[in-house]
Image (tube, rainbow, N blue to C red):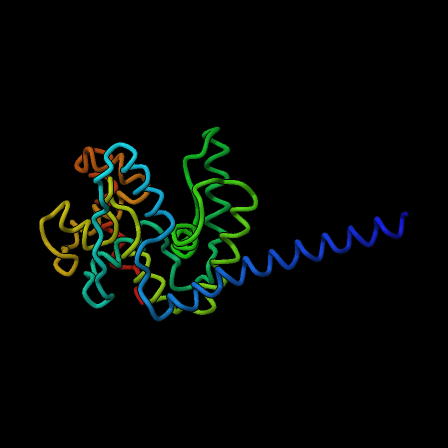
Length: 232
């Protein structure tokens, strides 16, 4: 009896391991494919569209892919300065930044800082839910490693800038430039780029008042740091 139970337990564990490997292989396949092909709609975009269509069945996302060369250098510098100033140097994780975020959250008694890198944010946006479970965080870490191993920094930043949320139903640099400035992502100036960059932590909230005193101050701070941003 004990031998039969142990055998079934081993079989069950083997099946769970196989299922986990197949699931990870599915993610890996998409990471390899998107190294060469541009993602159409990410998991995060699909969730937002579902939310919008619950209120309005005809709702659509505003999103237009533009190649890396047609995105303003100012926006690239601003986003790195605001979101991940060690982007060029790290291998997917900014351990020092995470530690600072943890300490800040402990001082405030609530979550006020993240510490996720651009690579981590992209991994989550491409594939995962918004939950903060240990399993989801583990998946994010694995996908982040694959992105860093299989893509170069230029590709990571290109896909990020084309898929990140910039307002209610607004995704990517081109749609954001048209929504807030009536122009293209190519023509964004330094101040415009900095203001878009500081909206990223909470774009749907900040779009209600993109010229608030808080965002004005953050914009000036990012403008002062942009010259030091290393861009791939």
